[in-house]
Length: 294
Image (tube, rainbow, N blue to C red):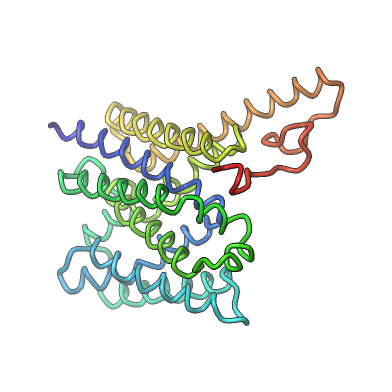
């Protein structure tokens, strides 16, 4: 398998994995958490570089500590989840900056961690993406109903006897795992695109969770494939190109859905909806409930 073939396979697999988990990120309103994790794992990466260890292992282990810290803070009555994420994000990233300044600048490995180098991925990276993908499929199969229930009715989920901490921990650790495997391809800075944008694109086209997940997987895989092909053809940065393609797909979807709803509105003799993702006659945008999704 050539370098380009591995890069294409990595981009497609990563897009599919990101698409799968991105719907849960959107349902739980975790885009900010995802952005925070891509930054807050930075101290672990710097420490690993200083110690001469694998950067991704360092980032992953530190990410686990970050997840546990967020869960611990968010369980306190005086702190909400958003507050906990903000505190951990600023503290974690600041610690990374301090450690990096003590190390006197970026190394080649740290630069690769930041912006990604998909053309250098190996068989181990492909295996890691595949394993994490299987973990996500297993999580959705075993706890998909719980995740949806928790997203739409947190109080009802706890009242039904479920353990919210366990399901939250499983989801957050899974998101962290996807961030770690996305870093070699698109870097820590752009990894959030892989985990958030596919669901945002799919959300414009449907409110049904199953269909949304399928569209998100297709959008993620298609953006990854197109981005790598363009980057190799024009010799530009692959991670940035994948992100630009994903953003262009979102803009195109936004324009197409807006046009579609405008046409429907005119045919029905009604004013266009202010939100292009909202059906004109359906009232406020609404996801399927846990029972409807099942």
